[in-house]
Length: 327
Length: 278
Image 1 (cartoon, each protein chain N blue to C red):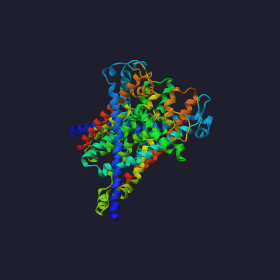
Image 2 (tube, chains in turn yellow, cyan):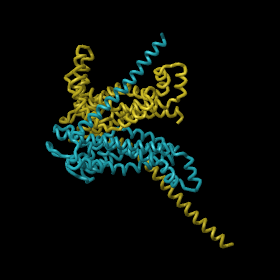
Image 3 (cartoon, rainbow over the protein chains, first blue to last red):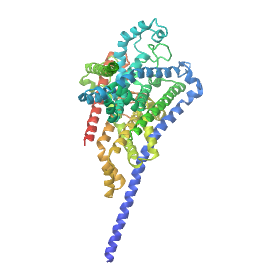
């Protein structure tokens, strides 16, 4: 009798010990994973803090002037961010003007028109292309696309619009090949797969019942797309566009090759310019003097703030469709 | 009459969509075609066995290839485990906590933040404090780009694991971390591996974060304390040079990177597909 009781006691002691061990190791694992999650937050905070810290010198020297001045003179140490900001916005706008209609069009083609056996291969091809490194687009742009534009599109634009008031200054100048327009076009080709692959997923999330009932009423494919699919997915499509815009704004390598790196603002989109990321990539390692380096980091901070806002809006909009779909 | 007009409009709009698809795919085909055409012209065994040449000489890409493999490998070794752990917290322990919501939002922003910003951050933190450019700075920059990719896929994949599996594990008395490691991870293994492969594909072509962290090196070096050559930065430098041999090597390097990235993405896709079909 006592033997059994003692045995039971020992057993429950062992049990207690192993339970304690379980609880301890579980707490350890739990805290490790939580620390890793916090590290994600810390890394973004670290990026923000280090950029602010690095750009203090530039902002304290130039103040608000930094954001609205066009001059960029390493010799006289006079720096202003307006030209790169303009270049970033201009190239991204050109890219979006082309890539959004084409990208959405391809997504509609893939979800509504494409013969079934071709859907998967083309969809996969688009997604693979979204993963091609941007430096590939850059080297292609420099050696193939820019000379091509210099021979064909640019002389055509210049001669066509030379007598149209307003447009003549937009398309003025000798055809360099490289410049704002070329960079914008390459960005357009680059973000195209992003827009298409997100829009395709989003369009596929429209409940079939909605589309079928619209078809049942006798609507054409285009009417179903424009009055059922697009209104249902509007918020997410805008999110996809913002996401692509975030990519375009921050893209470095595809742009650096073909932008020409000229710190000036010209009315002509055929002229060379620069973007924030291209300026940093081109000049950072050669920057001499603290003020020069700090000004480049300040440029980086401006880019960070712009893209943060754009990406935050994009994510909120994409999340809204997900809530709507009840997922 | 109305019907004819609707039909016409439908034909026009759908025609435009088909045209858009043709137009978009055409450019992408042109780029790939040109890349293969120009890249294969310089492809030979010496590309993989010889160092980068001085201007005007023939040579290969051995040191940048080794440098890229080394830095990519180390970056994944650092970034992937942290990413998997963070994803585990978000999908398992802290599924409904506010922290998870914030981390998910911030992680999504990191996922598409400009990579040159990451380069600037690492420059400020590592290069300035060490006083010189170094391979380890390049590794850290790449690891920071791996992290959000892995976090995202790990969380998504773990959330796909049915809760009934976890409950079954708990019911036979396994503590939470054993359930996660032996049940959840096992069920989500294909998906998590896919995420890691996609992360490798992503960083193997990254140039911007390496420009002012790992810099470049004309000579063979695996010393992480010193500047290391990498394939993307070498392509950048050689493509912008006036020397024909360098430009040819840039094209060949670009072809190698593209093939590596495409191969990784395809393997990742096959793995993910296999995970889905089970």
